Image (cartoon, rainbow, N blue to C red):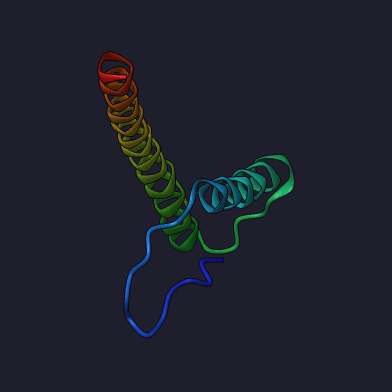
Length: 87
């Protein structure tokens, strides 16, 4: 999914990639809820734990991305105000 990774260098996923991850996870969760059979209860518990982890991390990541975007917008507004006052 994240084709930007080279060797062991970590490149954070984009919003589009996060949405793709979540779409796959939600599809898997819905499939399991509607018709999934549990063959190995322990493996299923591990899978559920990872899905919960993905949801939590995605929420945190999205929040941080939103904060970053707001900070960038704030800087752009300050720069525009500075230009307007000096121009």
